[in-house]
Length: 556
Ligand code: F6P
Image 1 (cartoon, rainbow, N blue to C red):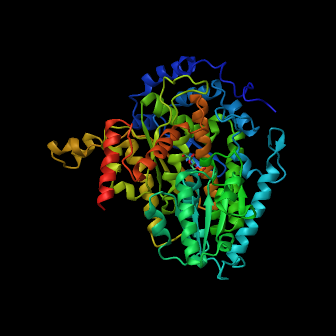
Image 2 (cartoon, rainbow, N blue to C red; image 1 turned 45 degrees about the vertical axis):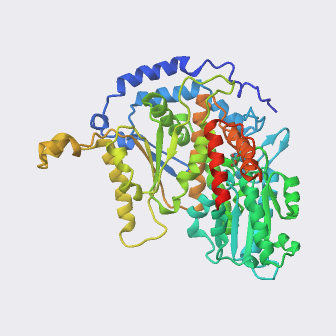
Image 3 (cartoon, rainbow, N blue to C red; image 1 turned 90 degrees about the vertical axis):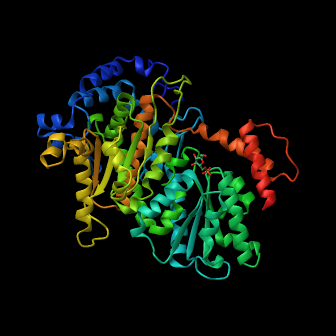
């Protein structure tokens, strides 16, 4: 087994990114293409729209409407080669401890590795364990879905509430919404994440405790929000079930890596579904954290989703860099982030079922690549992860697209669309897809002053109606939003995040930046709750806010 400082993961031999000759070549190249307009690029090369496309694992990417030339792609691919991307990919797949600050392997790819394959961590094959948990999840899911699993009073389970936050919530809720079409409609699914009591109160207000199953999902089983909600759930459930402690076994299951804490909470480990420290929270939706997904869509569909993930994993591992979807997506992101200075990326799914996909991607991308030091701890002198945001189309067109079309910020966009719909309804789908294509066309080519004038627009109004165009976008097309496709789509973004992190030489798999706020909140909670006036040692603003809150709490 290779060590954390093996050749593949060792960055000490790499010169700083911005000192590399390929980086400098990209800077020089950027100066020569920055003013080029997509109108010119398409006019010069009529086949550009067919040529700058790539297909991988059944997903189609059209990247022709980007402000790039063939030379840009060549240089970006060279950047990936020279910064050792292929070695880093292999290191991940080999189970090396590439999460160096936490001394952990990064093996979400093992969660979807087919039975019979082998991935070693510290000399032990993890794939059989993955399949043992999958089988346990399947047995449980089948019992709940068939009605064989009964609640404490003998009623069957009708409601499933996942309690978790971050990766223990966003993946499950996104997947549930995305795959609702495939879900068992006789079951109600809800997701509680926020420590704001409203989240829990609203989730249970119309439910019968005798028919409600809670899945407490937490990798650590110590997260403030999740444990607070889990205790409130326990109280609510017990109150509705005659305060019989035995009912917990029928109404609570846990998904965690921490069996000691699960037992302490009162959940029998027989009702616990495990995963491992080599699965990062934001990479865990296809582990046991996906139990709610499996309950909703059934084991067979869940397996199909895992297969979709795996197909994209294989593509990422084996396709040449210049034909590799996640690599190209990642490199284009670097092009805009580091050379054009674009600070955000909009993700625009034209698929209502993907309404929570941008929120899911925010954790995946921003918790992964929002880092200010390299693997060696040196401060970076270049921008790292951009801000991801978005909403489903066409809704966004009637709110924030104005700024994308005519504002002063450059916002590269990822449009995601499906050639067929799960809900054929008259002409809706043609209209939806027409809007995708229209938006990418309008963003790229805009409308010149001459064109506006030729429509009879008075001179004073012309500047307002001009679309400069040259706004870049990717279009990702798939056939239908199935479990299989969702797996591919998520893996596409997981690996594009990996690509960027590898090139930026940062650790995409830790999240130390969330710690300080958590620690400070733990200090402030007793200050808010203390019966006597607490001595406050914060800054004057924080002290004042605490006093104000305490005063109004005392009045109410
Ligand atoms: O606070 C950030 C974080 O650690 C995420 O990385 C993680 O997904 C989330 O909290 C929830 O953690 P857990 O699953 O351990 O409750």
